[in-house]
Length: 285
Image 1: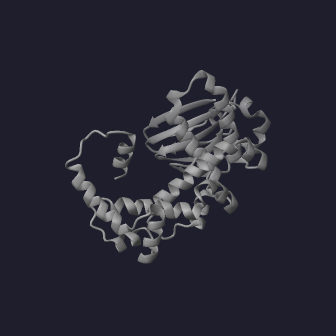
Image 2: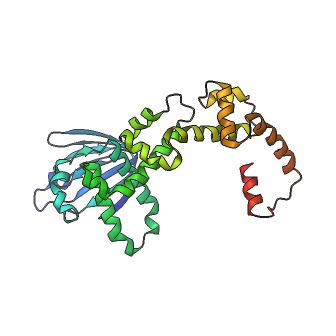
């Protein structure tokens, strides 16, 4: 396999197969635009690809198109790498991988690019196997393929779910169904992902409470307690106070009082922490 990052001005292009039928390359390529967009036309398909959605193309197929100025990651897959699944990849040529697994493969390509400089020669065989497993799970999900890529998929799904929660802490629509629509996974799988965190509903509430605590403890924030509660989708101030106390063992008003004391303490404190416990307490405050 080969991985390439390109930055280009707007241009038109045509596949090698369209330019010359003699000895065409038979690799597949997955393209992921970071910025910009691409329009590609094949014999019976017209694709409009935007940033963030992987597109699979077989270089055997004739196609042409144009791209806007932008940046893209390209993953080239030799046919020998996926010979046993060639029919699946060929059938998926000139398609967009838009569902939940496609999104996971997009995240994987972005992660691959950011860590490329850290890879060692000894990592390559495992990296190729992992990439192959994830790609096949994205193109043609099946129980066996999903199991083969299981650990990587679960990690990627969990990170996507956490990011979805973090990005929507102030969105009243944030609930289990909201996350399911964003990830494209089953309810039971989502529940399993968050078992170690006490469940997805508990995780959402915990992140909202942590965000609310940060606002209340911020000396520059002038938000009143009930306003902070509403900001993070607690419709009842009493409910917010009870949940806050369960989580932190003190009330929202205590958090606000403590911030004033922390500001006063900082003006007279030694800038060097006396031990790790002291350092961690300072970071929390």
